Image 1 (cartoon, protein in one colour):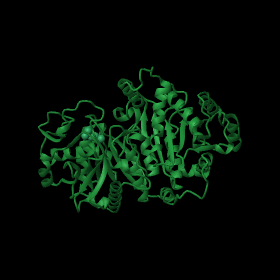
Image 2: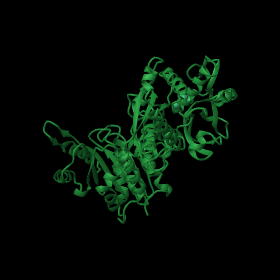
Image 3: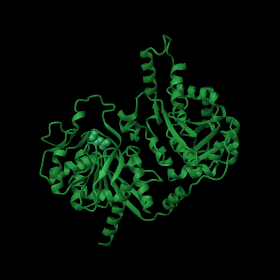
Image 4: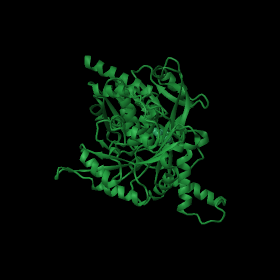
Length: 539
Ligand code: GLN
């Protein structure tokens, strides 16, 4: 069969959840046995979101092949259980970079290089890149931004051309917002009409409309929208607010979104998607009564999206353990010796977040010392693991000045340091250890027990490493280096065997936790937190 291309655009306002709709559709098509991938085209000029700070763009997600990606790729993986790659995330910056590189090489043979056709051709080439591998039946392309943005125009022009070329092998799903005006007690369709008009003005007729709404949209209102927007009535679908994003695929299926897509792309509509494992997860989510309370110590507590993958990985683990997740953000800059027991006192487990730079670091040390001394299940991720190492060096090994050279380049006790080969790199983009690396876990360690195996692969995003010169001293004093990269002997996991659950990972296990394949180490952490909770309750 020909590869089918689905474009997902958005209108009216941003943050409507194009990523969740794209992921939900992919989830349903995949459950019908089709091979699906989702890609995100972002109109900003950064080459990738790696250099964006979380205030700008939430978490930076990392793919297996080491691409620093938009956080929507995390949703794609969590919903489809399919790995994404560098090719699944393209920005205006990357498009321009390759066009300019070609121009400098003389590939355009003296022609004037223009947005149309050169930029649009490059966009089209990249849209079709994964389709041309023959590995997928459906390629879903989410266009970032909102219709009407200046930056989106070349992408929409490319979509217009592709729709023309691909005919019934393509379609456009447009997501809009139907606001509820409380004073008038009415839902309003006008913004949707305007947004579709804006799309039509650039030559794109949407085939399916998904309407984000807080209240039920009546059949009558759907008829009206269908009529004004040239869309079939059964192709006007609502996306009403729900308490979990993981219910959206079911909600879309109840309105036959998957069937409409199959029909419109000339595919047979047979049977039902195999959603049994997904439904089992939703069932657990609906029926969990008890709670597990986790404190996340980090410096971006006011940002919903800064620790997105950690939230989701914790949520997967808690749900499978039949618990509701109560996640408490603890601001690392506000933690002191004086308030730590009050702030962390009733947590069942504590996560020390990843991060960069000095800000908030002292609070992480305070939290770690308290957790270690009180034997609270504690999970340090990336910078969190590095802080575990530093805190242990300072307070157990007695190396008062122990630090990471990231925080103090002249520290006499560089327990966390750069790898030799990185020392001369100054360009900030792409100098990190990124993507999936092998790790061998020590037999009998808690980490090996959590994974149920000794060889694992997890994703990384960091520059600094545990300094192996100190390894023996740590081992002797009770912090074991139980995970190691077999090729470079880099320490990937530390743990304190004497504690309930005190583990730090240099990698980010949260990136690979999906609904159908939750992270084993998060599961183990949540189990330890539940045990600790029960133990406290019986005291
Ligand atoms: N700042 C640390 C490093 O670069 C940790 C990075 C992280 O937590 N992702 O090594």
